[in-house]
Structures are given as structure tokens and as C-alpha cells.
Image (cartoon, rainbow, N blue to C red):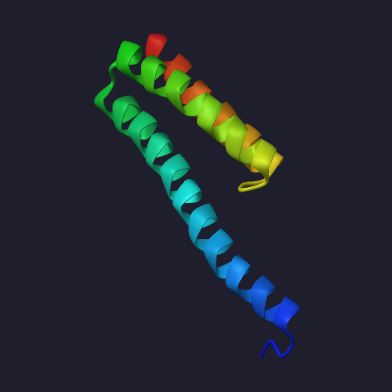
Length: 88
């Protein structure tokens, strides 16, 4: 339990930050799910468009530290591999 005023303030700030970061993580997951949904339908053009929309979101969240840089890179690599497989 936070006892002095500074630690109480930090506790309040961490609650707000945690909620904000959770919403950002959720947004990124939604973008990824949209790409996966287009891959499952087999539509190359729609999947490519969804992937190009998801990439800057993933990169931005990695830059801010919401998700790790390696996770963003791994996710983009896997998704782009699946999208390229649709073209063939």
C-alpha cells in the first residue's frame, strides 16, 4: 500500500497507464485479427491491404514499448509470409 503522497500519485498514474496500454494492445490484436480473417478467406488483395494497415500500428506499439520489438517483428514476419503464400 502506498503511504506517502508521491507513491500514492504513482499508484494512481500506473492505474491510468495500465488501462491505456491495455487498450492499445487490444487495438493491435484487432488489426492482426483482421489480417488473419482476410488470410482465411483467401483474398490476397484484401489481406495485403489489411497487412499494410496493421504494420504501422505494430511498429508504433513496439516503438512505444507496449509490445516488444521482437514480438512485433515476429508477428509481421508470420503474417506477411501467410499473405505471400496466398499470391502463389
